[in-house]
Image (cartoon, rainbow, N blue to C red; front, side, top):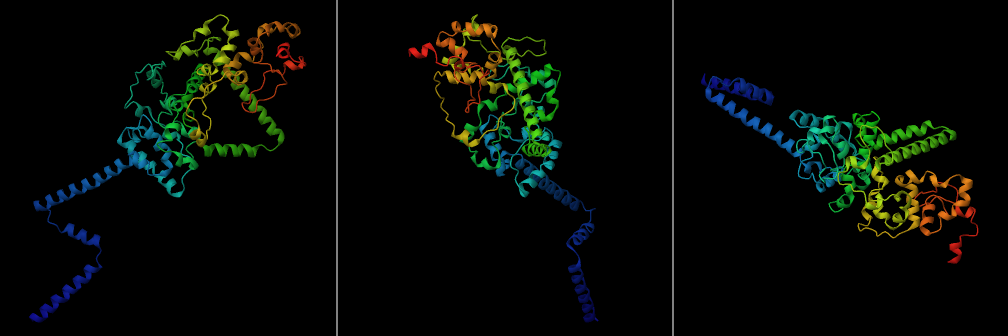
Length: 460
């Protein structure tokens, strides 16, 4: 009987082992858990300890992952972010993390951003985009800036500009409307972070590529916004006013526009419209310039005069003489480089021109010494909106054409007098300067009448 009993038990053990092989791991674990005696306090303490360790592992690991993905090192791990990372390390904000600017404060915002950022992983794996651009959803919030900066500042860090930051913020004007280039130097608008040139961004090259004029607020942005406010608009309400244009969307728009132009007549009409828009833009710019220098007054909410915003701006003593408007040509010839510190068109334009990164890196860092040159001054007076705001209009001293024809000799005796004439008139038949695109504002030229030259030329 004992033998059979053992045999029976052996058969049971064999069957149990076979059943164990067939039972899955999860089911065996579940059986183990439900068979635990939970009335035993020792088992309850074991469960508590195991749960505590598990929570530490899960939450600690999650926090570690979040911390790592929040670090600039993680951002730089993707090669397409090399321009953004290099400019960040060379900027004044290199002591803070990327997420302190690019994610709104709060844990919920952090997690939401991480979930949305999964599409970036998809783009990285399936194909890196040609250019990294900021989208409307990624606009840096004022909340991020106010974590470090006070809104009570009334002047800029340089002390030159009077800017009521609190007033701007209370009207919900985004800080990045003015400070878009403070870290990345507006590289997307300049087109210098495209795929072909990402390898050109190094610690050494960043010093050349991050020019001060792109880090500081663009005066053209201030002028454009203030001009729109004077017209009753609030341009910052449109997010597209803040973010740089997406090149892919621009290409689609251009392609669509090209497809719609079916005839040569339509192309000519479009060109005419473009010229009309450019002429309207130039006229508006010149009008603002006249306001800025006090030549034109208007009842507006925000004065456009230079002294409204510039605290330390000083008008040179030479400008304060009564005949300065008519006799500044000689000073311009001698010191054009000094004049251009203030009278420079590019400072008045909000749009950022596209640039070639290779040309920027090869550009000489040393300043080129200016040599007085009448031709350079003449071209500048024709293409510079500061100059053309006045010079494009017929001077009041010219009288009627038939009278002026015989009376202008006395006004052009010296080289200085002639220099003023040559701002508008060419000696020979006027042509467009291929280097600058400058052209004479009038087709009246000296040799049309003075075919044998001038007396002064013959004496020489």
